[in-house]
Every structure is written in C-alpha cells, then in structure tokens.
Image (cartoon, rainbow, N blue to C red; front, side, top):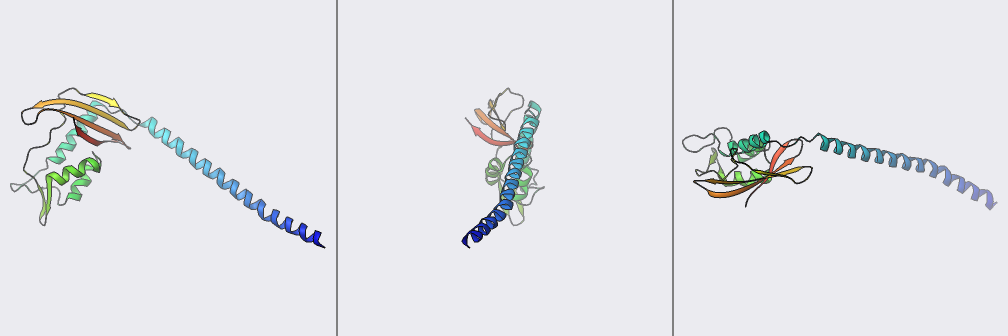
Length: 176
C-alpha cells in the first residue's frame, strides 16, 4: 500500500517541478536577452559618440559664460530668469549641476521680486584665441587644459572636463 502512495507523491512532485523548471529557464533566457540587448545598446552609444572638436569646445564655454553674464537691469536684476532653479535649468544644456550650482550660488541671489546678479568680475575663463591641450580620459570624458594671461586675473591655467552623455557638457572646472 505504501508503494502506490509513494509513487503518487513522486509523480505529483515531478508534475509540479517540470513547469516550474521551464518557467525558470524561460526567465533566465529573458534576463540573458535583456542583458545582451543592454550591452549592445551601450556599445552602439559609445560607437556613436562624436569627438569633441574645437567648435564644440568654443560653443560650450561661450554658452556657459553667457549664462553667467545674464542680461540685467540698472539694479542688477536678471531679466530672463526669476529664480535660481530657472537659471540652473538653463545651464543644464551646457554643464552639469556640479559645475553650475556653485556658480549660481556665488554670483546670484534670489529675492522676493526676482533674481539678482552680484556686481563683480567674471571668473578667469577659457580663451578661444589661445591654444590648449586636449586629453581623452575615457569613453565619456575629455579634458582640456589652457594657460592664459589677462590684466584682471594675471597668469592662470584652467582645466575643463567635458562629459559625453547624449551630448557634450562641461562636467568640471579646475584652476591649476
């Protein structure tokens, strides 16, 4: 009598395990397929990454400085943005928040009636007329280093790191 019950128990276990095994196998295949698709998409994106050329460097650095030197009225009130957040969002096209955040915090104050700029000189910056050294740091980063001299800042060396994330952006600025 025990033998038929034992056989029934094994048959029931096998009946339950076979569909479960197929389900696990199917999920494993799907996970592998998704992972392979992600790897291929990342490879395609890296292959599609354009080189950072002189024109792009000049455009991004000029656009960044244009955002620092906002249009203002005679009381230094910013004309095109009312809040720091609005201004930060405009910087997002050309720089990461790690770069734009400290600039906006230093040069701009938010008052009840709008955004004001600190009346001071602009920071030492990239000069498109001077040569620079370019170094590719990885698939996503390019760093340029430029030494300049001007009457206001004297001699300085600026290092600007650009990040490619669907488009080039300024990711870090350092003075050496």
